[in-house]
Length: 126
Image (cartoon, rainbow, N blue to C red; front, top):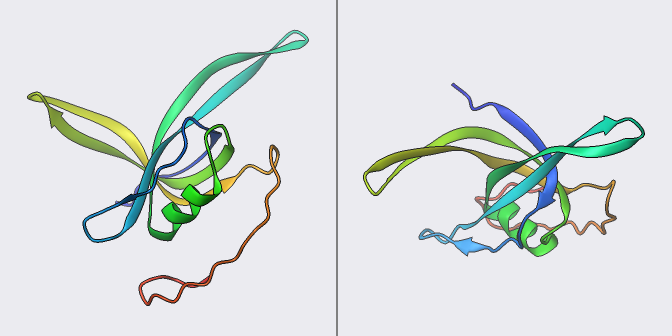
């Protein structure tokens, strides 16, 4: 069964930091905070904040790390799935997102797009 798609709009809680896996593939994990707002008379007030753990791989991870920083408002499109592990003999789990696309929210920023051509055979060209 395919993982459900999710779109998240929120702010980066920290600067992305690129890591290199054993196979030489770049990856990054980061958190997006998404705050809901509700109207209370003539004013808006916070109605709670959700935090999403997100991972990105390969070119997406590299370009994301070079382009965005803590506090930037982003749009993440990805697949959500449950991750499970064991710590100190106790089973744990959480929902996590694997990003297919990440971009700045243009309602809060302006960007200068730089197209990148890839020459490696395992990468898809734009």
